[in-house]
Image (cartoon, rainbow, N blue to C red; front, side, top):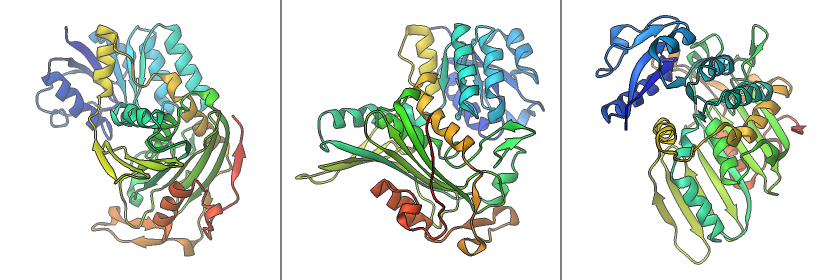
Length: 386
């Protein structure tokens, strides 16, 4: 198999993870980093050892033309995803596009339809959907391990310092300079909980979503939500509910919970760890491997391996993004509902909502929204149809 040349657009921030992953795959002889697209070129010390001296340019089209790269990894601000994806696709360059793929459903369709029309292939960067646990859980469900599935719950209790929202002009924004951003807890940092819950429910495509209820709030001085929940009514007849916060008291790994009438399956998707609990059996803990999405894209191009996360399999997730985008702006929590925990340095100070960890857990356990759980600061839910 010949080595596939790659260009990375957006190599700072989360892009550093992609640089390290490309180095790993380059060491295996699978890919070669041909170029980096950044507004300010990377200094020598920002390029991991072993990646050589890739070509650099602030213009993605120019860089792709010059390098002849076959794949572009796009890890740039959310509002730029569609335009950059189309720049690459129109040159016949295939894509690994970071999540969320777009800030609105209209932009998502423009991207997905444009990429398809250009004959390019696109993988959406939901790494959790590369976990071997996902098909394994689906088999458990199909085999009746937990009986009839009644719904899917997701829980994400994370924390972010106040400086997290100052890391970039678009951070924590719903829109910037008249352009949609939608950088909220459910659409970006904990988007995997939403996408994974939908996937385990078999509700990945846009037409699988029939209604969406949202409750969006914020403790931080931002536009977007940092404490929120969503319930998706699906064509499969089972709800998918996800509760998230970036203001946790005791941050922990997020998980997705499959509810059955004779048991349940908990999936800690960052760990690829599964706990199976069912009537008449002791609990079983299972560990799984994970397919790397960039490597899967290369395999798809070279030997026809099935693509793990094509755009249409994120259509249901994008319906959730659209419901959040069009919902009323997140309501600020009253000052009595949160307090500041000082960090080791001022940039590490973070806002905490007492009791929110338990509410996130209770939502996943009961498939209920914050308002239904009696959260004193919760607002009436907003209901939308796709």
